[in-house]
Amino acid sequence: MNPLVLLAVAITALLYLHQRSCKPTITPIRTLSVARTLLTNPSAIFTPLHSRALPNRRLVTAFGINNSFTTTSLRHHRTFLQTASHLLNLTPLGWASTARLAQSLLPPKDTRTLYLVPFLRTYVLTIILHLFFPACMPPADPEEIARLAGLIHELWMQSKSGAPSATARAELDGVINSLFPDVEENPLNFILPAYETLWRVVLRLFIETHRGPPEWREVLGLYLQEPSSTLFRNSRDGVSPAFLVHEALRLYPPTKRVHRAVSEKAWVAIDVEKLQMDEGVWGGDAKEFRPERWRYVTGDKQAAEMGWMPFGAGCFVCPAKGVFAPRLIALLVAAVGKAVPAEAKPMAEREEDFLEKGRLDNERDGYGTLNYCW
Picture (tube, rainbow, N blue to C red):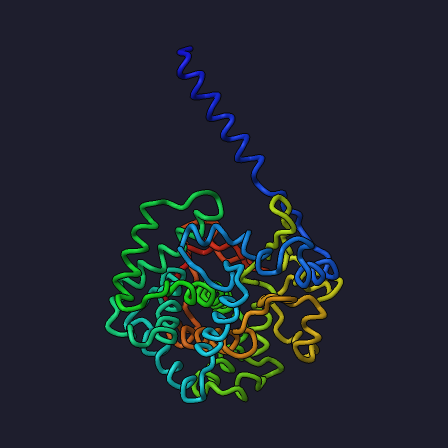
């Protein structure tokens, strides 16, 4: 063999081994008491912010963000939380306006087929942009928003397996500049945490409510008409919009594993998904979607004691946890339920996207070809 070829092979092998040796060892955590301890005191050598930022470096590379999830600066962290809390604080009039907006963005009434994933990505992202960047909305181009949603998904998936595509990254910058010409700070700092949490939960809760009893859709419909905190909690036949959302977040947490760095080469992965389906805590039906179980969970404190942590725990709890995210999830599911009639039939082009009985697939790229026809 040519000596240069041999040298190239040797260098490639050395680089591969070096890259492998630099990768941290990740230990899964599936014990609630250990998870709580690590979420409060993740490392003896890092600050909590540093411990969280290290595993999130891939998001900096993929999206160029600098927010509470990626910073090691306590000052920047606090400033980000203050701004985020302000954006998430909707008044009663704001909730009513959001309900009208959600209904105005639904497909035309003559629609007879809805591909759920591409629609929901663009739909939820459009709502977030209206709420967080009202000065830019409208006249934003819907096709540009759809491109942004697609690029976020593409780059997120790439960041989990290797270096993001330079082409996709450049395209993302172009879309951001087009949609937000006068916004100096990267808008993805605020968009990503809200959008990535919401759309996948909306997807799965819609599927569950559509295939569930009609009372679930009815109670959501009442909340859509008057999106108040009272109707969010009011139950019908033992189920409220709040119970539906809490159960969706339990069974389908948008962040399945929370990573913390104990050191540069030793990380832990707190298995939120596993903890929230622990049969020893939630019962033998822990893998079933049963929103009525929340009648017996009295408040956030008991939920936390049972291992419910879709919005984080310990040092870092998402400011959207209390009101914004749960109520917006219910509102958007209710609105989409208004557009897709109860008699609509789920269909799919890929075998893995067909709906089976039992717990839904919770992978980020699941149900890509699922559509409803009526």
